[in-house]
Length: 510
Image (cartoon, rainbow, N blue to C red):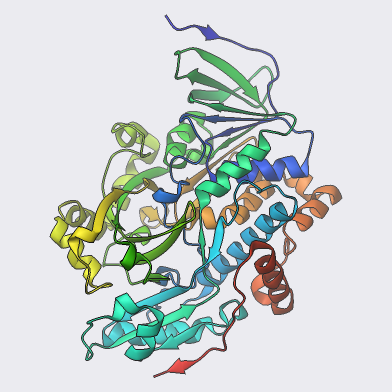
């Protein structure tokens, strides 16, 4: 019989659940802000970044809204709403500033070239989509963060940008593309593991792999939170006491947040969406494509299913992926349980989940169609972006599992959210991150929001303000409205991170 150990002793100041990019980012920030803080990290798998942060489980796109069309919706009057794109571009600039700070401190010495320059392109066909892309291009040019973007409708120009996309394409087909040379590809797995490796060398930081958090509750005697953790190797359980708890367990965060029973958690649900990639095995094809080419999502498709033909750099080798193809699984994690979804349904979130389902019937139909796809169907989708694709050059791979947020809504009853959201208790003693895209790329700005929610007094102190500004020089400023500061910082981060600074003048070819 497995033993259980109780403890009434004061534990670490902070417990982080999950060893992904979010916990790594928060852990490093807290240790920089308060060097004497004690932190324990609990991860149910045997290594860091093995779920959504792993390089093969995400697109690796440094999400900066250069090419992602779902961040620039068309309004009813036909104009383009670029506000979300600007916010995401600002957030990614903050991430680059933080990573540059860590590189300059030699904190990321185990992750050389975790970020690389790769052109970000949007590609569409059909007259209506071409008109949309041109309007999008013009709208983005109003903000300096998107200066350097090129636009073209000339097939000869597009053939230079993305040869395999344009080969044997119907010359009468209306096409258009934008190209941003400042785009990046990020190996979030390598980045996360490097951050944790360095964290473990610091006083007061302990990592526990192969431990599953089974339960959590408020500690009435000591304040803060108590966790029941199980050593999966021998089945032993013990209790851990902490003042602050962060739940950064990816798709597993919802179930743990529900166990907290904080009022702020009620009404939240989750809708899992699985993903698959086609991975190219033909080195000749791989070496002929050098870009991240994003298209428009199908009607009803979630944003994470926007199709893209994607150059990746993983473990020093160039790779090529196409997808993702969406699927449905009741698991909340790739290594999770098929009971994750049914177990997450409670009285407090049942109505929002039902109403969100009613409002997203098109998504349900889309997922059913995706699940029923044959290999030939997947090849047909690929050939829209790579007309000469051959089936024997591609293998099907399973990508990461994502859980989209469902939340209460006064008007709709329940809505499905396609972003990330920090849910925290009123006293700031616990916080959980829910949601998916753009996720890892904006981890720094997400954790800054968390610090403001959970450590408001410390964030206002001169010591923390000074350190936050050292780590993220644009901290406290709206970068999108400050071209002088933004361009100076972008130049600095590009130099530190070894990124291209080839900003071409915008050009329009119609």
